[in-house]
Amino acid sequence: MLVLNATFEPINVCTVKRAIVLLLKDKAEVIEHAEWELHSATRSIARPVVIRLVTYVRIPRETHRRKITRRAIFARDNWTCQYCGSRANLTVDHVVPRSKGGTSCWENIVASCAPCNRRKGSSLPRQVGMSLLRQPRTPAPQVFIQVASPTIPAAWQAYLAAW
Image (cartoon, rainbow, N blue to C red; front, side):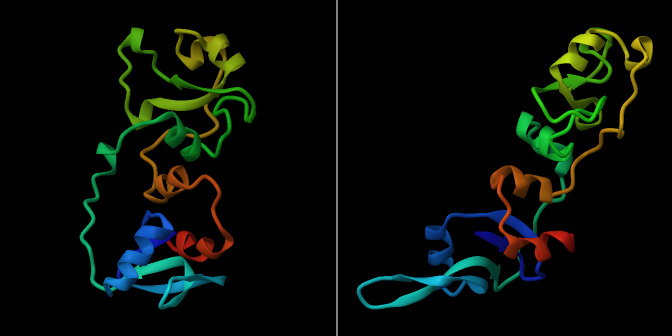
């Protein structure tokens, strides 16, 4: 389930069980629901797909402190090699190699196919005649929603696109 803040800002993904608990405690409301219902002994409820918190929750904007993972790098780079555009056999690459003082930060790590990664080796891209398709950057918050749920339901698109 996609969880929206009171301002309709996407903030997280949760399980159906957690969404139901939030709904039963009146901490959230259903914005989008599936066609089928969940049933208990005493009650039926539409299966939520998107819920919105009733009260605003302050979310720290420290995205630079979010953990850098392979999946987050791949999602940020749209699952494509940032040197040749291939979508096959992806690895991660330090643009400025660690052996040359490069750091493990969002702005220095990109998705790279294995052949490009081997070709570049421990050199700078310009030294081997390679260039980046896009400069790496700190990802937008919705990238972490994509990492939490690799398949994005159509009902979520309108809420993710706005942010």
